[in-house]
Image 1 (cartoon, one colour):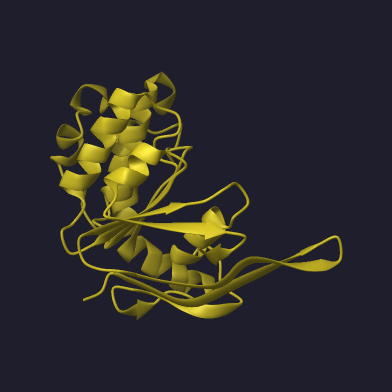
Image 2 (cartoon, one colour):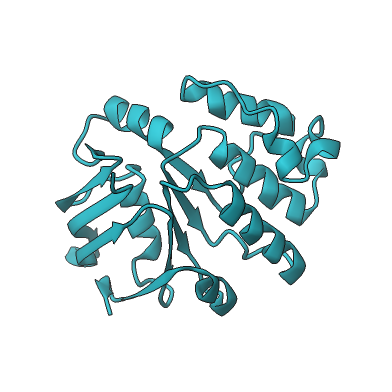
Length: 215
């Protein structure tokens, strides 16, 4: 099974009365076990691409398939169900609910996908000591790892990460990338948007976006 297939993605926006192409005929295939880094200048369309791959937005042309199921051009409820089942999202803002502890954030995410939280996940990510803490008390590295725990709680086929190491130190970056390599499913795929040359070099493959096109 191919974890992620995107074919001929187009996305347009209206700006000052004119149509602007954010993505133009972008196609990607991620093989089982592959980590793909997406690089490019600001405004190149990287975040737009990630939103389409995760079913958070629909393309104006083309389609996205995850684990063999079409994710694009669904009703919002259908897209949310498929996203909860197959896709994990890791963002710069961590995606943590401030009123929940780290442990309860992970349990909540797993519950949305109809799963029980893996009791070993927090230990594997070095978060046992802060499992009962709230996000505001965490360090930058702990916040990044807690966000990864939430993203992995559903045991996703595809993990999408938007600048996951932007706000952490180099040592914490190495820890996070090591956890990604170790804990992501071997038959799944990881897509990282990054400006970091170190993160891009760590990935199995790199694609470069310029003005909405793959360069």
